[in-house]
Image 1 (cartoon, helix red, strand yellow):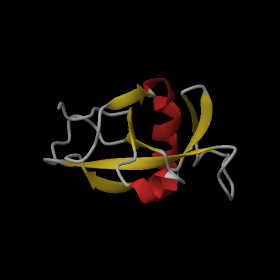
Image 2 (cartoon, rainbow, N blue to C red):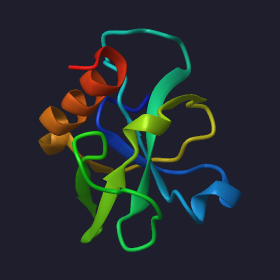
Image 3 (cartoon, rainbow, N blue to C red):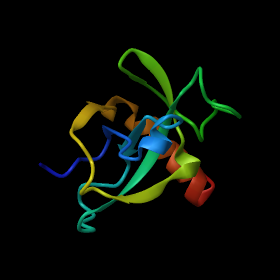
Image 4 (tube, rainbow, N blue to C red):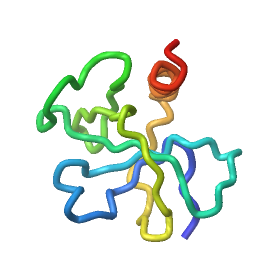
Amino acid sequence: MPTPSQFDVLENPSARARRDYPFLVIVQSDQADTGRMRVVAPLVRRDRGSGPLTGRLVPTAKIDGQEHAVLVPRITTIDTTPLGPTVATIETCRDAILSAVDLLIFGV
């Protein structure tokens, strides 16, 4: 199975976490080779999440016709070995996701 690319959306491999965070998006650049590990951000359906799911730190994307919040403040790394196929790509949200990462990491 090919390694997922930046802005690919995949089903969360953790059945327990999938209830709250059904998808993960790869935020790591394809140019940064880190073996099997990738930097990801979880996605939550906007109608099921709690807390602030708006603003620059939490961009939104449509997956399967549903609005999802990209939880940039919860970025983490994951081994790509257990990941299934790409279910969507949200490259159209690139600018909003990069803006959120810039705010989170650099404060700009």
